[in-house]
Length: 105
Image (cartoon, rainbow, N blue to C red; front, side, top):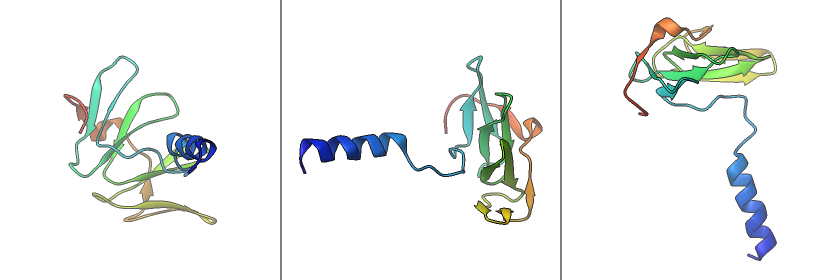
């Protein structure tokens, strides 16, 4: 692999996929550096369009600047041509589904 190929490969890895799914993680830090974690051990924490940490029991997808998440623990969510499809139905993530955390997990 020549230097140009390595550079392009590195840039693609750094950028990651252009998916509609926000990063998956149980805990996130807000703008004030406070940690929040999903209450559900298999849930996710995401940043909403206002910059707040909100949580859901399952994975989320972004639809026109709004997050839609699976309503079941560790459930999947995907964006289809007809809109979002989520295990157990889709719903917005909520702050009430988060708890103050101690750090990433």
